[in-house]
Image 1 (tube, helix red, strand yellow):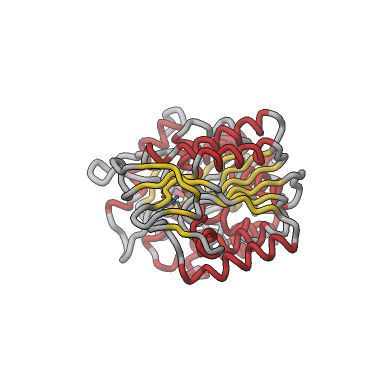
Image 2 (cartoon, helix red, strand yellow; image 1 turned 90 degrees about the horizontal axis):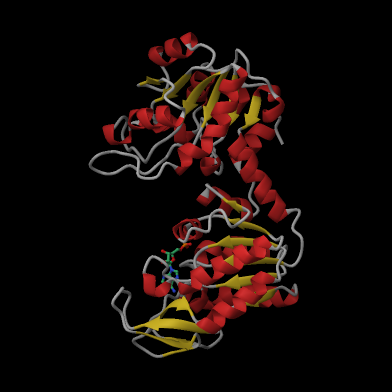
Length: 399
Ligand code: AMP
């Protein structure tokens, strides 16, 4: 782990890769959720407090061919300035080139500069070395605080590292917190260790389940993906979500779990609906006996109770993916019940990490974000971490 907190950044220009890829309103271009900006503030503030200056670089959206106004980071300047207590935030309308070099060189202690969208250059995603070198020239030290893009080997997230000696490369505080939380679960988990895996597709979650079979004592499987497991075991699932090309995979996962003595918990009952809509008719059914014309859109009461019991006896909990279509009120009770159980378990001493995808949205929506030990800001990155992969953005700082 890096030495960020112990380092004094006085008189240094800190080039920070942040993840300011925030959602903007399509018409007003106002920020609709500033969580990611807020998450980077402690890192920025520490450097400013030390008497250093800050150069922020990020991507925003997916620009296709060069600069596009709707993806300009200039739309974030005012809000960032407000979050920093009214501090002036300078803006360079190109992340490399003369203006960026000049503004960066004139930056004084305590000042902040935001660079234009890195992805206005295709070199960023390609991990182009020359581009990375130009970025590197702007700062004295490089700090990676963009956990959300840590799984990408882009110019600013990984390649840039080679232009800074090891003692000038740091994880920011957000990155440190993310890595610590993930390590706590992956390598220091107290048992029982329960992984709750939900969401739509088995195919998206195979690698994470396989890796967790080596670590967890219990794996709860909910959401749309549970029905592929039901069908694989001969169940009748009506028109529930199913990946027919993954039936064999589901059986293999069950067999491996048995061999490794990992308990797999599937939802015994489901809330079924006659259509995928808020005004659907609903009823409860056994998850392996769903009539034609009906689909499972949430776990049932018995499943929610059983899952809650397992969660309550756990000492380590990892949660990735909702138990049902929580975006529709009728189908959110299962996800809510799991959130309640995770919160209760956390209160009695369990370490709980919610990471990746829609479970984070669900936990935030239900107001449980401060009742779990850690909510990850990095969807895809956290998922890859739990798949057991080495994340380039982390390796670049450490190596
Ligand atoms: P993921 O991104 O893989 O975690 O999947 C999240 C999505 O899965 C959410 O949009 C949920 O609405 C959806 N989902 C969860 N359970 C079901 C289900 N039983 N049937 C269809 N979609 C579901």
